[in-house]
Amino acid sequence: MKLFVRTLGCAMNVKDSEHFISQLKDDYELCDSPNDADLVLINTCSVREKPVQKLFSELGALHRDMKSGAKLGVCGCTASHLGEAIIKRAPYVSFVLGARNVSLIREAVATPRFVRTSIENDETNFEFENSYSSNPYKSYINIMVGCDKKCTYCIVPHTRGDELSVPKSIILAEARKVAESGAKEICLLGQNVNNYGKRFSSEQEKIDFSDLLCELCEIKGIERIRFTSPHPLHMDDKFLEVFSTQPKICKSIHMPLQSGSTAILKAMKRGYTKEWFLNRASRLRELCGDKLSISTDIIVAFPGESDADFKDTMDVIEKVRFEQIFSFKYSPRPLTPAANMEQIEPKIASERLSHLQSRHNEILDDITNSKVGEVMSVYFDELRAGGKAAGRSDNNFAVAVKGSEELLGKVCDVRITSAQRMLLSGELA
Ligand code: 5AD
Ligand code: SF4
Image 1: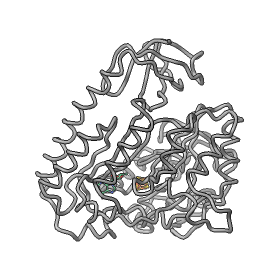
Image 2 (image 1 turned 180 degrees about the vertical axis):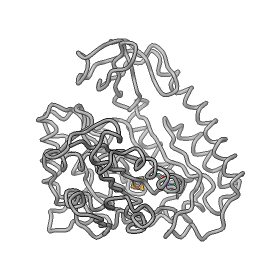
Image 3 (image 1 turned 90 degrees about the vertical axis):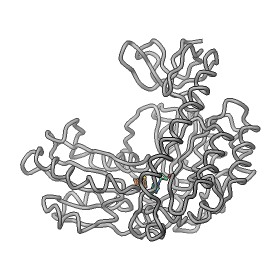
Image 4 (image 1 turned 135 degrees about the vertical axis):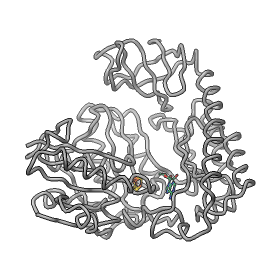
């Protein structure tokens, strides 16, 4: 039988979809179109309102085009959040499986009108067999589930539950399996990866994220280690030291700022100030030198954000000069305190977002132009049109060169010859 999976949202969802595929491998093979499938899974995101609003029209369209008798399952964060209501509104949906219930996919497929969305489920000890990676050259590894932070804008604690760390033995075993498969890169996943080790569901030895990184660096065959997302609050000196000195740890880090205003950060319950964030970012740049790239997430027009607060965000952008920014207008989410606060006018929100994005594009053009002439270490993992092979530099820039299959799976030095905003081009050095 054939399986089609549509994945929305973050890397955690990508990994969960990979788990679905590996759990269903005995009965289903992947296909490229929902119209050919016997089972269609849609793995949803609920972090902002729009995709949730679009879910039902999307489900309707899938249902219309699907083969008769095919099953349609709704998984992920919106499944957690809306649960049974999804089947009530779209009765052709076969099952609803929450973001913390990934291990139950086989049962869900086999049981008519199955709904399971418990956020208490402990999936940290679940060893997924026949693990599947959508990219043969690199793999995601879950190191924790859930989130203990209660950022006042965020629905995730309600969709993925409390934070629990995966035992070290399972993580190391997975990383060794990745290395044995010939893949050189792992990316550790969690909502707050550098809070790793705070709580397990069983007795485990004391360990923190920095210790875990050091142990993973020992694994032969793993040449690159990435992780997402760390929380700026937990970026202690020990973490900065390990990050900057271990050569296998890629010099690219995601530091979700959210806002540059200390007052707004307080209203968001982020737990750090503008000064702390700037201190951590500049310390990292000092320790790692100019090869480091820093990406961030920013929410504009959080309730109560004044012009002065927004200026603080712009000020951080000028000071840190992020290599990449993911920016969003605040979107009120159910079950979150900020949804009940006084909202900012949509027009102001749009103006702030476009101001931020256009200024950042200028900064990014400066940054990428300055890379011309530099030699970067690139791990090739895809072919592109026009006889090109592409991959990521250690510091996470997309880089393409003339080349074909023989480059795939190799780490090579590339001299950058030209720069576009999201893609650098070069030649093998
Ligand atoms: N509105 C807008 N953006 C949000 N994010 C999380 N919740 C919201 C919300 N209610 C953003 C944050 C987070 C990223 C994954 O999504 O920036 O880091
Ligand atoms: Fe990922 Fe958050 Fe979206 Fe869930 S709601 S898929 S955790 S981004």
